[in-house]
Amino acid sequence: MAGKIDHDSASARLKDALDTHEQVFERFFLARFLDLSFAYLPDAASDEAKEVCRLTFPVTDMLRNPQGALHGGIMASAMDISMGHLVAKVAGPGATIEMKVQFLRPVMGGTVTVEGSFTRRGRSLSFMESKLFSEDGKLAAHATATWKMPG
Image 1 (cartoon, one colour):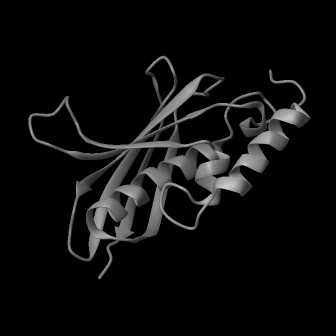
Image 2 (image 1 turned 180 degrees about the vertical axis):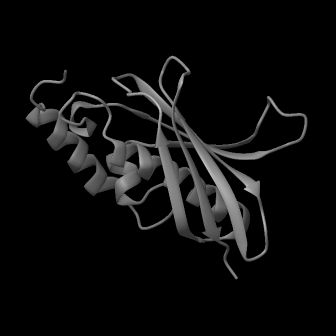
């Protein structure tokens, strides 16, 4: 279980987010505060090129719930961000209409990887999914969502 949050580390993370954020994709405050790193790629495991937004971030003490695991709200937010940034990358800013999250296992530490992708892309609505993996590559959470496409 996680101990008390280190004041200096938390202050430094907050200061960095405040100093470096911009109200643009990839650099908005929450992305900077969570220390998200972004990559856009085709899915190498698929025969067809599948658009993916992959983000990674470290599990820090200030992101843990009282049981010491990565907080579910942080997991859901990261999955929503992975889908939203992919929509923005391929079509412009969209909006989450609804999202369902299934939490499969706790994430206790390390670096988390999140991958957002389309399951069906339409002109006005798209269906998406996001998967969150712990550092050992195990699926820890899965989200499905409906997105309003720009336009």
